[in-house]
Length: 231
Image (cartoon, rainbow, N blue to C red; front, side):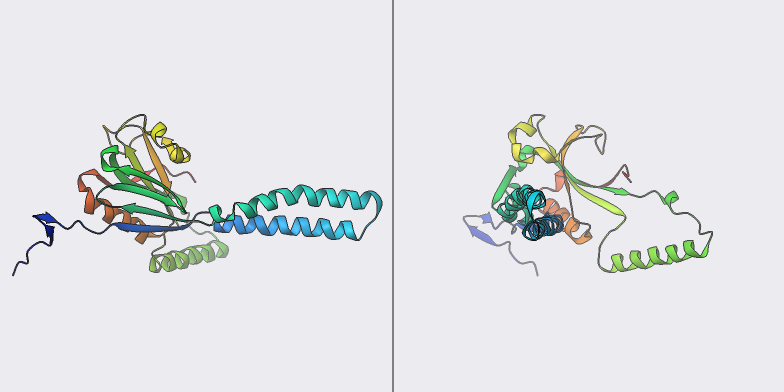
């Protein structure tokens, strides 16, 4: 039995719900490392200044002050560094969210969307010639199997590529300037520029983005395609 399509009234169909894809926190690990390093330097310099006299105390205080400035700046910028990132796809368009900041592109401004990936060449795997090489192969195999079970790709770098419908799109969306790339198009006939957003190495995240594009704008979906491996 075929059920009727849900309607909001007067013959208007209910649109599909938005597809919201979380990309995690952009700089959590890097920020934590920076904070630990700066705290160690400032703490060591302050302790040295307190336990010394004369020029050594002045030198220690100066070093502590120099590193205290970026420490304070990092603490003030902490909410931005740790803000969560999302890609949201709905009937209106494609939206990039980073904390409270958001950039929305209507579908009319998007020419095509695809997922590029860089995969290491097969010839990078060498035949083992020693017991250490054999151990390395076993280790790589184990890591690959664990990654596969967790849907994590360690050999592949997945990038969300958004090809704009107009060549001046970079000026229209200045907040996305760091992601603007000039590189050969994945297919003939496409422009040689796009926004390239690195994705976490989790295949399910990429699949959710694919589902969102296929749901709302299937004619703009380019699919998955290889990109040159950068090492």
